[in-house]
Image (cartoon, rainbow, N blue to C red):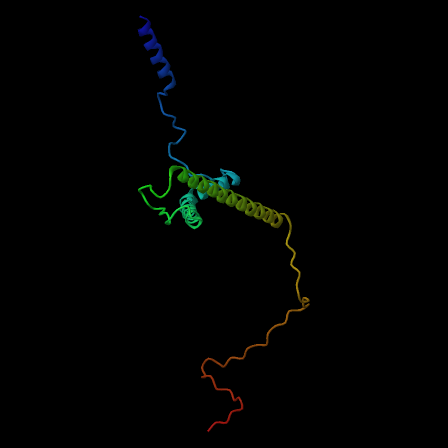
Length: 174
């Protein structure tokens, strides 16, 4: 009896929360983001995240090559370790963790530098826009303004029914 009552109560609670008719006022079609929906700092932070994770593979290859060069030139290994060797004989697990940690740190520094540079650029652009929009622009002429405009001399054109005559420019004709 208790089990049946618990099942009935659970079914009633589930049915109470489920709407019978769909809400016709709201659309289920996705709407694209507005231009100002997110603050600029969050866009810059997202860009820094993308730059950090995007640079990780390239930084890892560079750190691996640098660490291998360091080991080779200090005499720790007799041959240059191959960073693309899949057998795993080139670096130990501890060395691989060091390489990955250094790569992760360098990638984070690259992302932080990108974030700082973009924030500075955006702050300077917003200040410049505020200065331009907040004040009127005054144009100061370099040369003094003439009181009366000077009209160019009229252009003399031949009548349309006569062919143009060559002008005598002082050359001798034969």
